[in-house]
Image (cartoon, rainbow, N blue to C red; front, top):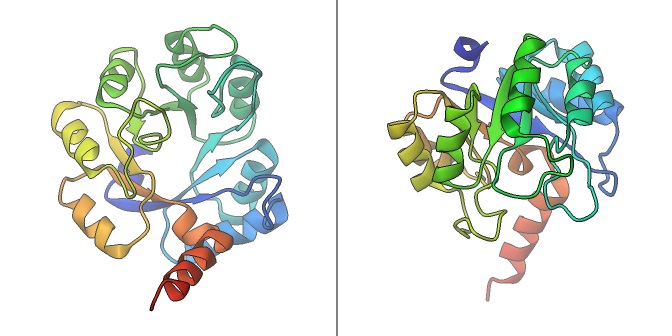
Length: 224
């Protein structure tokens, strides 16, 4: 699995309930389009989307479940409940928030990683800082994603991707580093690739037309 995605592009096909493209039938077609464009794997949110995308594309899937719990900011596969759902979904990799924040079930990250491994699946740590990535490797995660850099109050707040974090993690970790988070241009991909991440994930820049449209509208209206 890790060799399959090495040096390749992964596309995140996600749409939340309040977004126009929400629903497994739309996401399965979005994933099919991504496959036709050359994506070798899909990152997907929710059991129904994962099942539909697997049926449509037969690509490897990084699965997650976004769910809010009162009093906690963590919402990417936040508890054991979501992990058990994902184990049954057919995804090959389970992504979860591995940041240094409140987890609703108070179960250790290591226990969650062990559960994923017992099911024969790989565990991806979504992190926001260098220190979180180091800890994630120590407790047994199979790979690191930089997707949450800038989305925790204590991580670097950047407009674009955290290329410096990708560079440092590739240099210092012994497990694959997946570059992800606010990558929106070909130039950014070229710059990130210089530091040899295991793979790159693109999301909103490909699969959220409302966000893509807004970028063009903002650029157009701001021209004097």
